[in-house]
Length: 107
Image 1 (tube, rainbow, N blue to C red):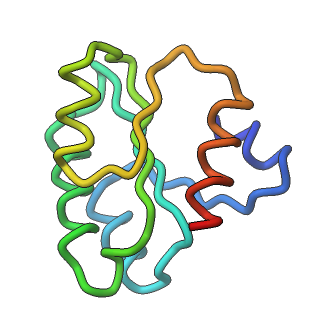
Image 2 (tube, one colour):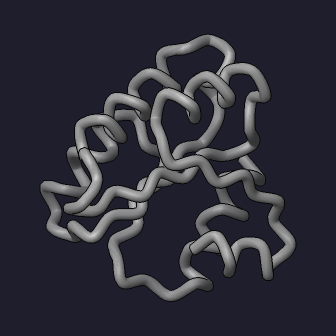
């Protein structure tokens, strides 16, 4: 995912631990946050990060995209309830991700 986003002229900073993302996210205030949720990653940590970003006044308006291997309707519903602005189920076409990011950045 990061490779494709870099190839489409987005600047990325990839971090793999939620506490680092939150600390850095509130210091730098990114334009958009993408959270990748997989069965191998602690899902609750990513959802907690999403909730924390959306509850912090500095980052509450930063769009959050959840990319997950879970694509059932309930999974989408749950991700959006946690504060995500978009939910993309894997596998997805890179153009779907780029289109979603562009739409969210336009506001």
